[in-house]
Image (cartoon, rainbow, N blue to C red; front, side, top):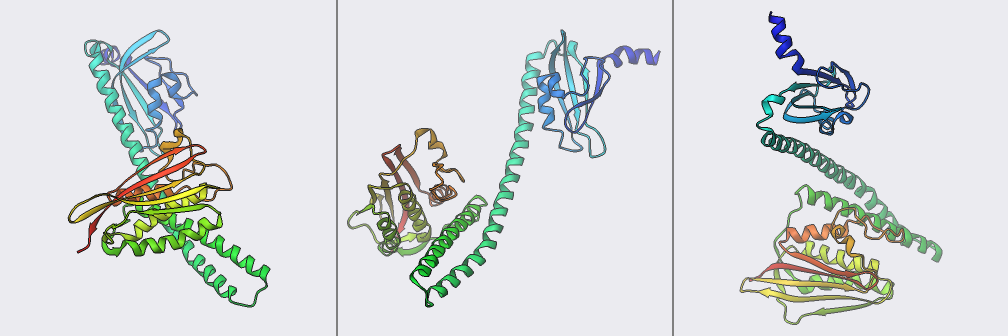
Length: 363
């Protein structure tokens, strides 16, 4: 009698499906549904596509309630218990027929189940993204540090070699090597800065500095680059801007050099304009607006969302060097300095970047 009761009320209401680690059906008793062997469980019903993403989580068990399955004219509402197994045990599914029980609660239970499932998948994706981000930052930081030592050694050797008795051709070769080494050094520094920013290790320093002195040094770096490409360079600085400020002069310089280098890179002919003006001010603070405008290639509006993404190059030309990190670093530094950045662009007509940064006024 005991077995008779079990068979009537339990045996015919429960189905066991055994899977492998790829989600392929190995065995099924088919008491509720005919589940084809040697096929992916996701082919049996769309719901089970989510099961595939949970298989890698060993020793975990999930219960999904009120799942509506309609296959080959068999309609049932079941609870699904999924066990991800382990390295020595296959994952398996248990389908429990609760059709009659759920008839009155179908819509409510379905909504709840989908919400729970979405939450689990969202948590898993967030964990995976965080893990990938941490690995990338650690990798970039380690590689960048390991590369900096041989690069400095190479630069020292080239500077020493340049002072020896060389022919004109040999001097040209040394200059080419120095330019290449400098370019590599900039790429490595960008990688290091990106890893610091994304890992939260980039600190903004507040110290007293002279704006005019910083601009003089900046222009001494930029002007030779502009002259080399035979581009007109205009500088417009508003009169009587407070000179003694408190802020991070190194990061300000990094932002401006990146924006100006970007304009030089994408401008073959025409004009690059660099402007500074006062956006707002008070007794103890001043907000400065920095504008970098060029007549370069510009880019399409469909690419606007990509401008500040890491490793995203807006131009696929092999003639344009770089990793696509400059604008991403600029955007992150502006945010760290509590500033704002915006831009306007048009293909073939150029791009204008506008940065607003707040500073304290030094007493």
